[in-house]
Length: 307
Image (cartoon, rainbow, N blue to C red; front, side, top):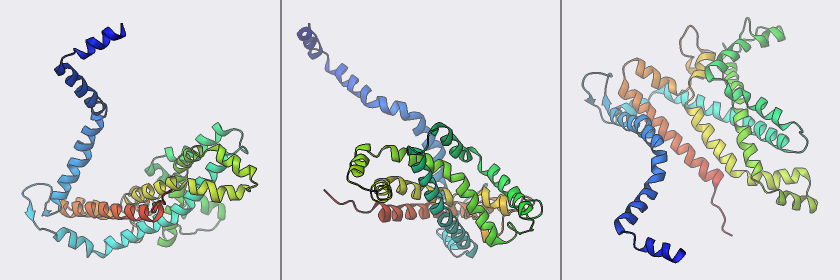
């Protein structure tokens, strides 16, 4: 029977065999076609269109007026743009380190044998991530309010948390840490489960202490997870918009320049009808994201040693 079936397959027409191979090759692309269509239609196409518009003076209607690199040069000479970039850099540096430390330590504790009811702690720690950014900002605005804020009511002192720019920026940092810990806790928890238990058991048998296992085995093996969190968190912080504006803005206005995110320049240009300028700002942000990601990969990823 097997020999007969083999003869039948061998006698199968070449056209049928070729069509079968073509179907096998096209099947994976058929499954991912919804993503490809959405990616091209909602991201790649608009991004390329914005790149073209960034070289023109365009009000959103009418004709396009060629200005070359003028939109980019004007943006790079705009002092507010660089102040907003410094604000974003502050937000990222100030909240990433404590966020990563808290999330990693929580993941280590929950994954250890010290915690018995893991199914209870996991959703509780992740829950802040489910709160929308606007809702989180409104919540923290009530918490840090000067006159009727929860924190000032508890302290009994009217501290101007959101009026003083230095204090307001730290309020944004605290909110970012609160929202981000749950997400990266899950990422680090997944990374910890990929570490072989045999390695830890062998280290324990050799007399390695718990602290040495954490610093010399766990942390180095979590290198890829830390790299991923640094890069993604930098991208998310660069495109942050709602949180600082809701915390520091008044009567529907955007927040002061001293705590404004870089997306404020893009949005304000769009509101003023300067779509070419807004497109240039968007592509400059993209270039900054690409440079930051590359630098982080080179610094944290490093050059892997062979062998």
